[in-house]
Image (cartoon, rainbow, N blue to C red; front, side):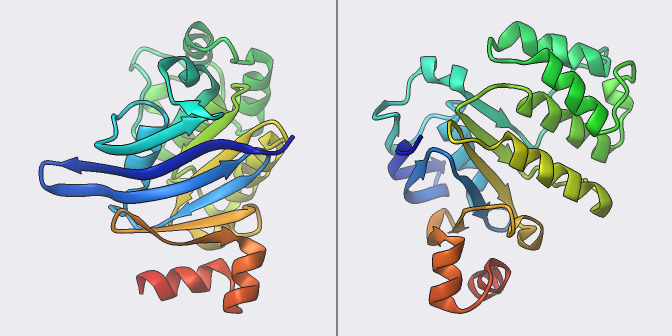
Length: 232
């Protein structure tokens, strides 16, 4: 399958006089993995929250499959936030039950498989997990959904170097010709071989965007080099 899944035009969000997102226009195609690059405070999280329907844009439009983004579209969008969102009484297996109650597209069998891959015990208390293991649990719960659009905010935060390869492999296996994945990160080296396209966000605006092949050919350097050039 091909085509545009989501289109943003002139998207902006201000908190008081402080701009979080100034002016973002982009298209996300079905069947692709995008890297949303930029340091903390560049607007990546705010953009994701607007696209997932958690934050209302101050200006601009968001079209999902050709129509204005609505509350019904949230059922097809899986957003993984950087903040923890599990109740203290929950065990790891309870997180799966919690997701199954909220999302019709949640695949419990896939969740169990992802827990095993992430080396998570179903009977462990969620609030006692290390930051790295909690990050894995968030990712397992998010990727267990059969969503059309996955928005993964800093999926490698807190993940040790050895586990990152497993995380990236899991994300790659989740990608299909029927969905779109966006990963925000500043760890460019870790995702460069996985993403199809790179979007560099600086001070709430897109500084540079394109497929990894196009950018490498035009600028004669990898995405990590462009990152250093844009933000250095």
